[in-house]
Amino acid sequence: MSTDQTVHINPYSDDFPTKRAILGKDMPMRLDCGVELSSFPIAYQTYGTLNEDKSNAILITHALTGDQFAADTNPVTGKPGWWTTMIGPGKPIDTDRYFIIASNVLGGCMGSAGPAAINPETGKVWGLDFPVITISDMVRAQALLMDELGIEKLFSVIGGSMGGMQALEWAAAYPERVFSCCPIASSSYHRAQNIAFYEVGRQAIMADPDWCMGRYHEEGKRPRSGLGVARMAAHITYMSEAALTQKFGRRLQDREAVTFGFEADFQIESYLRYQGSTFVERFDANSYLYVTRAMDYFDLAKTHGNGKLAKAFQGTDIRFCVVSFSSDWHYLPEDSREIVRGLTGAAADVSYVDVVSDKGHDAFLLEEPEFTNVLGGFLEGSARRRGLISQ
Image (cartoon, helix red, strand yellow):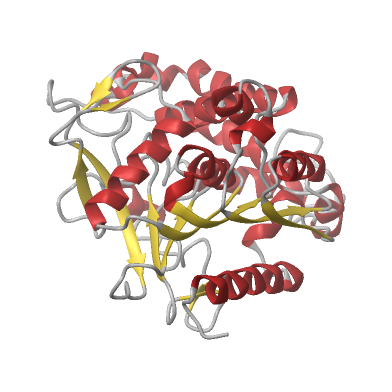
Protein backbone atom coordinates (compact mmCIF):
# COMPACT_ATOMS: atom_id res chain seq x y z
CA MET A 1 0.00 0.00 0.00
CA SER A 2 1.45 3.36 -0.96
CA THR A 3 2.00 6.32 1.32
CA ASP A 4 -0.65 8.30 -0.59
CA GLN A 5 -3.23 5.65 0.25
CA THR A 6 -2.40 5.57 3.94
CA VAL A 7 -2.90 9.30 4.42
CA HIS A 8 -6.62 9.11 3.60
CA ILE A 9 -7.59 6.16 5.82
CA ASN A 10 -9.42 7.30 8.95
CA PRO A 11 -9.41 4.70 11.77
CA TYR A 12 -12.44 6.45 13.27
CA SER A 13 -14.68 6.17 10.22
CA ASP A 14 -17.55 3.69 10.26
CA ASP A 15 -16.08 1.69 7.39
CA PHE A 16 -12.66 1.17 8.99
CA PRO A 17 -12.24 -2.65 9.20
CA THR A 18 -12.05 -3.25 12.93
CA LYS A 19 -14.38 -4.34 15.71
CA ARG A 20 -15.54 -1.71 18.18
CA ALA A 21 -17.09 -1.80 21.61
CA ILE A 22 -18.70 1.30 23.12
CA LEU A 23 -17.85 1.18 26.81
CA GLY A 24 -18.99 3.17 29.84
CA LYS A 25 -22.56 3.47 28.56
CA ASP A 26 -24.25 2.64 31.87
CA MET A 27 -21.55 3.95 34.19
CA PRO A 28 -18.67 6.27 33.21
CA MET A 29 -15.14 5.00 33.72
CA ARG A 30 -13.19 7.17 36.13
CA LEU A 31 -9.60 7.85 35.07
CA ASP A 32 -6.65 8.28 37.42
CA CYS A 33 -6.60 12.01 36.59
CA GLY A 34 -10.15 12.30 37.99
CA VAL A 35 -11.99 12.73 34.69
CA GLU A 36 -14.85 10.38 33.81
CA LEU A 37 -15.25 8.90 30.31
CA SER A 38 -18.62 7.66 29.13
CA SER A 39 -19.71 5.93 25.92
CA PHE A 40 -16.18 5.74 24.56
CA PRO A 41 -14.93 3.35 21.84
CA ILE A 42 -12.29 0.65 22.13
CA ALA A 43 -11.23 -0.95 18.85
CA TYR A 44 -10.20 -4.59 18.83
CA GLN A 45 -9.54 -7.68 16.72
CA THR A 46 -10.08 -11.35 17.57
CA TYR A 47 -8.53 -14.57 16.29
CA GLY A 48 -9.60 -18.16 16.86
CA THR A 49 -12.79 -19.37 18.53
CA LEU A 50 -14.01 -18.82 22.08
CA ASN A 51 -14.85 -22.16 23.68
CA GLU A 52 -18.16 -22.92 25.38
CA ASP A 53 -17.12 -22.02 28.92
CA LYS A 54 -15.03 -19.05 27.73
CA SER A 55 -11.90 -20.40 29.41
CA ASN A 56 -9.48 -20.18 26.45
CA ALA A 57 -9.30 -16.40 25.98
CA ILE A 58 -5.89 -14.74 25.69
CA LEU A 59 -5.50 -10.97 25.77
CA ILE A 60 -2.56 -9.64 23.74
CA THR A 61 -1.46 -6.21 24.95
CA HIS A 62 0.53 -4.13 22.49
CA ALA A 63 3.62 -1.95 22.74
CA LEU A 64 3.80 1.82 22.25
CA THR A 65 3.54 1.84 18.46
CA GLY A 66 1.50 -1.35 18.15
CA ASP A 67 -2.22 -1.75 17.60
CA GLN A 68 -5.02 -4.30 17.50
CA PHE A 69 -3.86 -5.80 14.19
CA ALA A 70 -1.51 -8.30 15.80
CA ALA A 71 -2.05 -11.19 13.39
CA ASP A 72 -3.89 -9.87 10.36
CA THR A 73 -3.16 -7.30 7.67
CA ASN A 74 -2.97 -3.75 8.96
CA PRO A 75 -5.46 -1.75 6.87
CA VAL A 76 -3.42 1.45 7.16
CA THR A 77 -0.02 0.09 6.16
CA GLY A 78 -1.08 -2.95 4.15
CA LYS A 79 1.57 -4.95 6.03
CA PRO A 80 1.18 -8.17 8.06
CA GLY A 81 0.34 -7.84 11.75
CA TRP A 82 3.13 -7.11 14.18
CA TRP A 83 3.06 -10.58 15.87
CA THR A 84 2.42 -13.01 13.06
CA THR A 85 5.54 -14.86 14.24
CA MET A 86 3.66 -15.88 17.38
CA ILE A 87 -0.07 -15.91 16.60
CA GLY A 88 -1.68 -18.39 14.22
CA PRO A 89 -2.53 -22.07 13.68
CA GLY A 90 0.16 -24.27 15.22
CA LYS A 91 2.14 -21.29 16.48
CA PRO A 92 2.88 -20.67 20.19
CA ILE A 93 -0.31 -18.61 20.55
CA ASP A 94 -2.32 -21.20 18.67
CA THR A 95 -5.53 -19.92 17.08
CA ASP A 96 -6.73 -23.54 16.80
CA ARG A 97 -6.66 -23.77 20.59
CA TYR A 98 -7.10 -20.25 21.95
CA PHE A 99 -9.35 -17.26 21.41
CA ILE A 100 -7.12 -14.20 21.09
CA ILE A 101 -8.19 -10.62 21.70
CA ALA A 102 -6.00 -7.66 20.80
CA SER A 103 -7.30 -4.15 21.49
CA ASN A 104 -5.99 -0.72 20.63
CA VAL A 105 -5.13 0.97 23.93
CA LEU A 106 -7.07 3.85 25.38
CA GLY A 107 -5.22 6.92 24.11
CA GLY A 108 -4.26 5.12 20.91
CA CYS A 109 -5.05 6.21 17.36
CA MET A 110 -6.42 3.13 15.59
CA GLY A 111 -10.05 3.47 16.55
CA SER A 112 -9.96 3.61 20.36
CA ALA A 113 -10.79 6.75 22.33
CA GLY A 114 -7.81 9.07 22.26
CA PRO A 115 -6.70 12.55 21.23
CA ALA A 116 -7.29 11.76 17.52
CA ALA A 117 -10.90 10.69 18.13
CA ILE A 118 -13.97 12.94 18.06
CA ASN A 119 -15.04 14.52 21.32
CA PRO A 120 -18.79 13.78 21.41
CA GLU A 121 -19.47 16.98 23.35
CA THR A 122 -17.90 19.29 20.76
CA GLY A 123 -18.02 17.27 17.55
CA LYS A 124 -14.34 18.11 17.01
CA VAL A 125 -11.16 16.09 17.40
CA TRP A 126 -10.21 15.84 21.08
CA GLY A 127 -6.61 16.98 20.68
CA LEU A 128 -5.12 18.05 24.01
CA ASP A 129 -8.60 18.27 25.53
CA PHE A 130 -8.45 14.49 25.87
CA PRO A 131 -7.64 13.66 29.51
CA VAL A 132 -4.17 12.38 30.37
CA ILE A 133 -4.30 8.62 30.81
CA THR A 134 -2.26 5.94 32.60
CA ILE A 135 -1.45 2.27 32.08
CA SER A 136 -4.04 1.57 34.79
CA ASP A 137 -6.65 3.42 32.72
CA MET A 138 -5.76 1.37 29.64
CA VAL A 139 -6.28 -1.83 31.61
CA ARG A 140 -9.56 -0.63 33.16
CA ALA A 141 -10.86 -0.12 29.63
CA GLN A 142 -9.67 -3.61 28.65
CA ALA A 143 -11.46 -5.06 31.68
CA LEU A 144 -14.67 -3.35 30.53
CA LEU A 145 -14.10 -4.83 27.07
CA MET A 146 -13.81 -8.31 28.62
CA ASP A 147 -17.10 -7.64 30.45
CA GLU A 148 -18.65 -6.69 27.11
CA LEU A 149 -17.40 -9.97 25.60
CA GLY A 150 -18.68 -11.96 28.58
CA ILE A 151 -15.20 -13.16 29.58
CA GLU A 152 -14.90 -13.35 33.35
CA LYS A 153 -11.39 -14.81 33.52
CA LEU A 154 -8.60 -14.66 30.94
CA PHE A 155 -6.55 -17.76 30.37
CA SER A 156 -3.55 -15.50 29.80
CA VAL A 157 -2.44 -11.90 29.36
CA ILE A 158 0.66 -11.57 27.20
CA GLY A 159 2.52 -8.45 26.14
CA GLY A 160 5.93 -7.05 25.32
CA SER A 161 7.40 -3.66 26.25
CA MET A 162 4.46 -1.37 27.13
CA GLY A 163 2.32 -4.47 26.62
CA GLY A 164 4.27 -6.07 29.47
CA MET A 165 3.34 -3.15 31.70
CA GLN A 166 -0.32 -3.75 30.89
CA ALA A 167 0.07 -7.48 31.60
CA LEU A 168 1.60 -6.69 35.00
CA GLU A 169 -1.17 -4.17 35.73
CA TRP A 170 -3.77 -6.83 34.94
CA ALA A 171 -2.08 -9.21 37.37
CA ALA A 172 -1.96 -6.62 40.14
CA ALA A 173 -5.35 -4.96 39.61
CA TYR A 174 -7.44 -7.99 38.57
CA PRO A 175 -5.71 -11.11 39.95
CA GLU A 176 -9.01 -13.00 40.11
CA ARG A 177 -9.53 -12.48 36.37
CA VAL A 178 -6.17 -13.83 35.13
CA PHE A 179 -4.95 -17.43 35.12
CA SER A 180 -1.49 -16.83 33.62
CA CYS A 181 0.60 -13.81 32.71
CA CYS A 182 3.66 -13.27 30.52
CA PRO A 183 5.35 -9.85 30.63
CA ILE A 184 8.09 -9.71 27.97
CA ALA A 185 11.01 -7.27 27.72
CA SER A 186 9.31 -4.93 30.15
CA SER A 187 9.58 -3.22 33.53
CA SER A 188 7.50 -2.41 36.58
CA TYR A 189 8.43 1.28 36.21
CA HIS A 190 10.28 3.66 33.90
CA ARG A 191 13.87 4.43 34.75
CA ALA A 192 15.16 7.99 34.30
CA GLN A 193 16.80 7.03 30.98
CA ASN A 194 13.47 5.82 29.55
CA ILE A 195 11.74 9.02 30.64
CA ALA A 196 14.57 11.05 29.12
CA PHE A 197 14.35 9.42 25.68
CA TYR A 198 10.57 9.84 25.54
CA GLU A 199 10.83 13.46 26.67
CA VAL A 200 13.17 14.13 23.74
CA GLY A 201 10.49 12.70 21.45
CA ARG A 202 7.71 14.76 23.00
CA GLN A 203 9.74 17.94 22.77
CA ALA A 204 10.53 17.21 19.10
CA ILE A 205 6.80 16.92 18.37
CA MET A 206 5.85 20.06 20.28
CA ALA A 207 8.68 22.07 18.67
CA ASP A 208 7.31 21.32 15.19
CA PRO A 209 5.48 24.46 13.92
CA ASP A 210 2.81 22.19 12.42
CA TRP A 211 1.93 20.84 15.86
CA CYS A 212 -0.14 24.02 16.36
CA MET A 213 -0.36 23.58 20.15
CA GLY A 214 -2.00 20.21 19.58
CA ARG A 215 -4.69 21.62 17.23
CA TYR A 216 -3.10 20.45 13.98
CA HIS A 217 -6.19 18.43 12.99
CA GLU A 218 -8.29 21.59 13.02
CA GLU A 219 -5.61 23.44 11.05
CA GLY A 220 -5.33 20.71 8.43
CA LYS A 221 -1.68 20.11 9.28
CA ARG A 222 0.46 17.29 10.73
CA PRO A 223 3.72 17.63 12.68
CA ARG A 224 5.52 15.14 10.45
CA SER A 225 9.06 16.35 11.16
CA GLY A 226 8.66 16.31 14.95
CA LEU A 227 6.95 12.93 15.07
CA GLY A 228 9.53 11.51 12.67
CA VAL A 229 12.39 12.64 14.91
CA ALA A 230 10.58 11.21 17.95
CA ARG A 231 10.33 7.86 16.18
CA MET A 232 14.00 7.96 15.16
CA ALA A 233 15.15 8.65 18.72
CA ALA A 234 12.99 5.88 20.18
CA HIS A 235 13.90 3.36 17.48
CA ILE A 236 17.59 3.62 18.41
CA THR A 237 16.72 2.26 21.85
CA TYR A 238 14.94 -0.74 20.32
CA MET A 239 18.11 -2.07 18.67
CA SER A 240 21.33 -3.28 20.24
CA GLU A 241 24.80 -1.99 19.38
CA ALA A 242 25.61 -5.42 17.94
CA ALA A 243 22.51 -5.36 15.73
CA LEU A 244 23.25 -1.85 14.50
CA THR A 245 26.85 -2.74 13.73
CA GLN A 246 25.96 -5.99 11.99
CA LYS A 247 23.15 -4.47 9.93
CA PHE A 248 24.71 -1.11 9.08
CA GLY A 249 28.17 -0.52 10.51
CA ARG A 250 29.69 2.52 8.81
CA ARG A 251 28.55 1.49 5.34
CA LEU A 252 27.55 4.30 3.00
CA GLN A 253 24.10 4.61 1.44
CA ASP A 254 24.11 4.29 -2.37
CA ARG A 255 27.46 6.10 -2.79
CA GLU A 256 31.14 5.37 -2.78
CA ALA A 257 32.29 8.40 -0.80
CA VAL A 258 30.89 10.91 1.68
CA THR A 259 29.26 14.02 0.19
CA PHE A 260 30.62 16.54 2.70
CA GLY A 261 27.06 17.60 3.37
CA PHE A 262 24.08 16.66 5.48
CA GLU A 263 22.28 14.16 3.32
CA ALA A 264 22.01 10.54 4.48
CA ASP A 265 25.57 9.48 3.73
CA PHE A 266 25.43 6.43 6.01
CA GLN A 267 23.01 3.51 5.78
CA ILE A 268 21.98 3.95 9.41
CA GLU A 269 20.96 7.55 8.68
CA SER A 270 18.87 6.47 5.72
CA TYR A 271 17.27 3.70 7.77
CA LEU A 272 16.29 6.03 10.62
CA ARG A 273 14.88 8.59 8.20
CA TYR A 274 12.80 5.86 6.58
CA GLN A 275 11.53 4.72 9.98
CA GLY A 276 10.54 8.29 10.81
CA SER A 277 8.84 9.02 7.48
CA THR A 278 6.76 5.83 7.43
CA PHE A 279 5.77 6.12 11.08
CA VAL A 280 4.07 9.49 10.61
CA GLU A 281 1.65 7.91 8.13
CA ARG A 282 0.26 5.45 10.67
CA PHE A 283 0.50 7.16 14.04
CA ASP A 284 -0.96 10.30 15.57
CA ALA A 285 1.47 12.77 17.14
CA ASN A 286 -0.77 13.62 20.10
CA SER A 287 -1.27 9.91 20.79
CA TYR A 288 2.51 9.61 20.97
CA LEU A 289 2.52 12.29 23.69
CA TYR A 290 -0.26 10.61 25.67
CA VAL A 291 0.95 7.03 25.47
CA THR A 292 4.59 7.81 26.29
CA ARG A 293 3.43 9.87 29.26
CA ALA A 294 1.34 6.93 30.47
CA MET A 295 4.47 4.78 30.35
CA ASP A 296 6.45 7.38 32.32
CA TYR A 297 3.79 7.47 35.04
CA PHE A 298 3.73 3.68 35.41
CA ASP A 299 5.01 2.50 38.79
CA LEU A 300 3.44 -0.80 39.80
CA ALA A 301 4.93 -0.93 43.30
CA LYS A 302 3.74 2.59 44.10
CA THR A 303 0.24 2.06 42.69
CA HIS A 304 -0.49 -1.37 44.14
CA GLY A 305 2.15 -2.14 46.76
CA ASN A 306 2.76 0.95 48.85
CA GLY A 307 6.26 1.09 47.34
CA LYS A 308 6.91 -2.65 47.67
CA LEU A 309 6.62 -4.72 44.49
CA ALA A 310 5.99 -7.95 46.38
CA LYS A 311 2.92 -6.40 48.02
CA ALA A 312 1.46 -5.66 44.58
CA PHE A 313 1.29 -9.43 43.97
CA GLN A 314 0.55 -10.59 47.50
CA GLY A 315 -1.68 -13.68 47.57
CA THR A 316 -1.75 -14.08 43.78
CA ASP A 317 -2.62 -17.46 42.24
CA ILE A 318 -1.53 -16.39 38.76
CA ARG A 319 1.09 -18.43 36.91
CA PHE A 320 3.84 -16.12 35.58
CA CYS A 321 6.55 -16.35 32.95
CA VAL A 322 8.86 -13.34 32.77
CA VAL A 323 11.08 -12.99 29.69
CA SER A 324 13.96 -10.63 28.98
CA PHE A 325 16.60 -10.40 26.24
CA SER A 326 20.28 -10.22 27.02
CA SER A 327 21.06 -7.29 24.68
CA ASP A 328 18.00 -5.19 25.55
CA TRP A 329 19.11 -1.82 26.92
CA HIS A 330 15.69 -0.17 26.65
CA TYR A 331 14.29 -2.47 29.34
CA LEU A 332 17.28 -4.16 30.90
CA PRO A 333 17.27 -7.81 31.95
CA GLU A 334 17.71 -6.40 35.44
CA ASP A 335 14.26 -4.80 35.11
CA SER A 336 12.76 -8.25 34.53
CA ARG A 337 14.78 -9.77 37.36
CA GLU A 338 13.37 -7.07 39.64
CA ILE A 339 9.86 -8.19 38.65
CA VAL A 340 10.83 -11.79 39.38
CA ARG A 341 12.17 -10.83 42.81
CA GLY A 342 8.89 -9.10 43.58
CA LEU A 343 6.90 -12.15 42.47
CA THR A 344 9.17 -14.48 44.42
CA GLY A 345 8.71 -12.26 47.48
CA ALA A 346 4.97 -12.77 47.09
CA ALA A 347 5.46 -16.56 46.83
CA ALA A 348 4.05 -16.48 43.30
CA ASP A 349 4.39 -19.26 40.74
CA VAL A 350 7.00 -17.68 38.47
CA SER A 351 9.55 -18.78 35.91
CA TYR A 352 12.13 -16.50 34.29
CA VAL A 353 14.16 -16.75 31.10
CA ASP A 354 16.77 -14.29 29.87
CA VAL A 355 16.97 -15.12 26.18
CA VAL A 356 20.47 -14.73 24.76
CA SER A 357 20.02 -12.52 21.71
CA ASP A 358 21.91 -9.78 19.90
CA LYS A 359 18.70 -8.21 18.52
CA GLY A 360 18.04 -5.83 21.41
CA HIS A 361 14.61 -4.78 22.67
CA ASP A 362 12.83 -5.60 19.42
CA ALA A 363 13.84 -9.26 19.72
CA PHE A 364 10.35 -10.17 20.94
CA LEU A 365 8.94 -9.05 17.57
CA LEU A 366 11.48 -10.98 15.50
CA GLU A 367 12.34 -14.60 14.78
CA GLU A 368 13.99 -15.83 17.97
CA PRO A 369 13.69 -19.64 18.36
CA GLU A 370 14.48 -19.78 22.07
CA PHE A 371 11.80 -17.20 22.84
CA THR A 372 9.30 -19.03 20.63
CA ASN A 373 9.97 -22.27 22.53
CA VAL A 374 9.72 -20.56 25.92
CA LEU A 375 6.37 -18.91 25.23
CA GLY A 376 4.94 -22.02 23.57
CA GLY A 377 6.05 -24.21 26.46
CA PHE A 378 4.67 -21.84 29.06
CA LEU A 379 1.27 -21.68 27.39
CA GLU A 380 1.09 -25.44 26.91
CA GLY A 381 1.98 -26.07 30.54
CA SER A 382 -0.58 -23.50 31.65
CA ALA A 383 -3.20 -25.05 29.35
CA ARG A 384 -2.63 -28.47 30.92
CA ARG A 385 -2.95 -27.02 34.38
CA ARG A 386 -6.07 -25.12 33.37
CA GLY A 387 -7.57 -28.27 31.83
CA LEU A 388 -7.71 -26.90 28.30
CA ILE A 389 -5.72 -29.93 27.12
CA SER A 390 -5.55 -33.36 28.73
CA GLN A 391 -2.62 -34.36 30.90
